[in-house]
Amino acid sequence: MTEAEIMALLEQTGAYLEGHFLLTSGRHSDRYFEKFRVLEHPEHAELLCSELARRFEDMPIDVVIGPAVGGIIIAYEVARQLGARAIFAEREAGQMRLRRGFAIESGENVLVVEDVVTTGGSVREVIALVEQTDSHIQGIGILMDRSGGDVDLGYRLEALVSLDIRSYAPVDCPLCRRGIPIAQRGSRSL
Image (tube, rainbow, N blue to C red):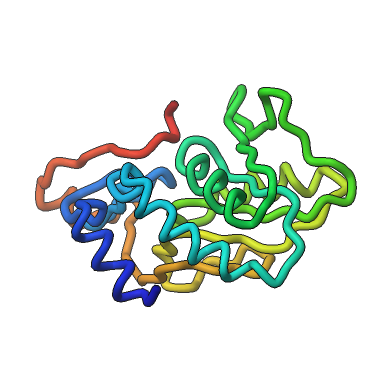
């Protein structure tokens, strides 16, 4: 799939939104990607994750991990297509942890996936968690890179869509100054 085809799918499903949004990173933006609007359609999830999986099919992948909540469906579907295990990390006492009996075994090859990256905070937390194991991170796959390619996560990064979408510290937000009501979406507070 081309980036234009992926953007058309995001727009068609209502996953691409314009307004005033509080991002997981704490920053504000005039554009938001509600990935679950596209992922609620299994055929779309399969299509997008197939493209991510294709980009890593030349590498040995034993485990695909994503942060809860946004990375769960993506990790599952990419792992299914690569013939790997799917697990997810979730917050416990403010830190990403493996729970529910999940483990990464010594020597396993790991692919980290995520839905949307602005600053890469959640992905960095998952990377740090994986780096505590005796495993090998093969790369990072994401649906949407909001940084326009500026985010550096220290590993090979494949993004289905990469756009340079401005985000603002709350004190510098022009949308706040204009009095536009802010919408809080996402799952960081879960």
